Structures are given as structure tokens and as C-alpha cells.
Length: 488
Image 1 (cartoon, rainbow, N blue to C red):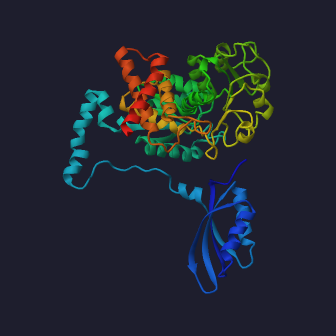
Image 2 (cartoon, helix red, strand yellow):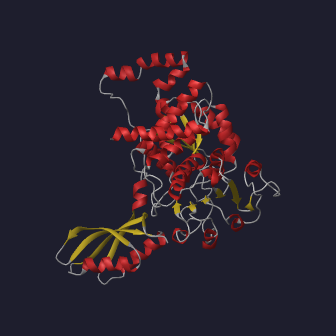
Image 3 (tube, helix red, strand yellow):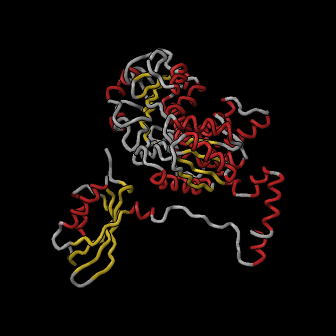
């Protein structure tokens, strides 16, 4: 199922005989062990030898070593050194701070720093809200983690979480022009995290919580939302949920089903699964069945954690019990945010006609997509090497762009629903292989930002914290259509 990709790319510098067959021999050696050669550059040529940089994609670190051994095993070939191209990207970090103003003269310095800066400080002291326009708070987000749930790797700690948080910050800037900065906390104490973010908050216009394990992430987000006057957003929960809902709307368009006629299974009720359920319920599916490691969730199941009690009361109208396989017969949609290889081909075959399968566990999904495609009409994964990739980068840059532009003080489910509608509506004509836009589609972030901003503004007009679900969904569609018209 897995194919060599750029995540395990290497560049090997080799010295080979200057023969007519050298290039072919090297390429065959890479291919023989399953590598994919992406570049072949002659660095130096001599009468009796050539120095070549060979770039290859591999499956894993072990596979990269096999490729290196295959090259070095050729007669007359010596591998001088091997560079891991992913590690090269991370040398010295991936982001930096640059000044927005020139500091070329004494006059520049006098305005940007002392004595002129004192007047701006005094203005903010008199009117604290002016910090939103006179400082970086206007366009800056803190990407906060405790390193307790880094990607799918587990509890790696604050330092090991840094590369992910840097990457997140780079995505914020690339896709929405938002300045974000990693805040990696060397504590996993809930009270200490909450207090630390609280005292750091004045410098930021929003807080993006990232890679914090459940159930602590629920309490941290909830209490920070109560304490702070800026939006707090846990991307592992709400970013995933927004993209899933946007993609699901299009998948149901493809198969010709309405949400309120669909029975849906959500497998995995951690951060992402809980948020997906929370956003799905207002859309009133025919039934929603939640499944975790201990099986189907229902009110009579003993030992439910407090975070699951609400799920048990709100879902599973048919009161099904048992394991995942017992939840699957006759359902229309499977959404997996759990673990690899939990779903069997027979489970998908037991679903309703024209079924939809979102197997989103990364890097290995709940079921091999090629097996799911034998029975399901639409299949999506979290991987970039299959169609219909569900990727949070479609959501969080535009969401924060809209929140910052509207100077929002909080984030609501209505804003998230509007964002999901905007993502879905970017795809004008969905088909089984295209239900969600590319992460490089430059219309996505503006569409999402516009939908979020309009939801904030409409809520202010009505003097409420939220608008109704229908209005939120309409705002997403309205923004997407407006952008489509602008493009024309």
C-alpha cells in the first residue's frame, strides 16, 4: 500500500567508474530495492571516474539504508556520504523573525524605538484594546503544545514537538499571512499550562492549541476560552472536524444522500472524534454511532469517562452495543480517526449502498483504501498519496485569518460550520476522487476567512455569540460564490 515518498528522501554522493553503463547501473540498483530516483546530478567528471549526487525517495529509514547498500554494492562504486533531505530542511529551524519597518537612520530609530515608542506604550496603557492595532497582536497566533501527543508518535515532550510547531507556524504564514510562533511548554500539568498561556496571552491575537493529549486538551481549551478575550482553538479537534464536515458534504452530494437520512459511525472518540461528533449533531444525521477502543459507546456501558458521558447521551439512537463490526451493518458513512487496520473489508461490504469511508488514521489508515474502494462509493484518507486527502491546513490558516481580521474575542461552532461549508463549496463539481480542494488551492484560505469573518460580524449585529446553523452554512456558500465571481 505504502509507496516511497519525500518524507524519507535521501541524497547519496557516489563515486562511480566513468563508463557508458554507470548511470543505468546506478538507476537499476535503486529500483531493484524499491527506491524511486528523483534526481541524478553529475557533480564532477574525471577521465576514470565521475562523482554523482543521486536523490531518492524511500519508504523508511531502514529502506534508505537498503538503497545506500545497493549503490555501494556495485563494482567500482563508493558511497562518499548520504544526506537525509528531511533533516536538511530542519537545520537551524524553519521560521525566522524579520522586521516590517526599516531602521536605516536615526529618525527611523527614534520612531520605532525610543523616544517615540514611549508615546505608543502610553496610548495602549490608556486604551488596552489599542494593542490589537498597534502591536503584533493584530496578526499573531501562539501555537501552544505540551508535547504530550505529537502527531501519531505519542508523548515526546516539548523539545521534540518543536519541529511540528515550527511547521505549523510556516503553514500559517504561507497560506494566510498569519504570523505564528511556537510556544512549547515543558510541563504537562493542566493547571500550569492554563496559567502559562493566560499570562502569555496579551502578546497574541489568538491561541492555537496543538498536540495536547485527550482528555486534558478538553479542559485546557474550555477553561482558556473562559479566561481569555481572544479566540482559543484546538486544531487537533476542530481543524480536523471542519475539514471532515466540508468533505462529507461533498461526498454526500456525490452519492445523492441527505445528511438527515444518513447513519454515521465515528471510530475514535479522542480530540478529533469528539469534535467531529459535536459539529455533526446540529446537522441532524439519522443516527450517529461512536466507537472507541472499548467498543460502541452507549449510556449503559460501565466505566465511561466524563468526556464520553455526553457522547453516550447524544448518540446511538438505536442503542447498538458490541464492537466496531457490530456498528457497521447498514450505515452510510464511516469516519475513522483512530488506529491502523481496525476496519475489515467485510465491514465495508456490510454498509449501505453508495457508502462513504473516511479512513483518516495516519500514516496507516483504518483500512487499506484499495480494499475500501471495492465496496464504498467515496473513500478519503489523511494521506497525500491518495485522492481526497483530509488535511487540517485547509482549515486553520483561513479560520485564524478571519478571526484576526474581525478582531474576534472568541470562536463558536457557528464559525466552524461556516468554515466547513466554505471549504466544501470551493469544489464546484465534486466527484468520487475529488471531494475536497487541494491544500495548494489559493482560494481556500480566503473563502474560509471570509465565511468566518462574516459569521463574527453577523453575530455582532444580532448582539449574540452565535447565529443559527443554517445561517452559518449559508455564509460559507455565499463566500465561496463571491470568490468564484471575483476570479471570473
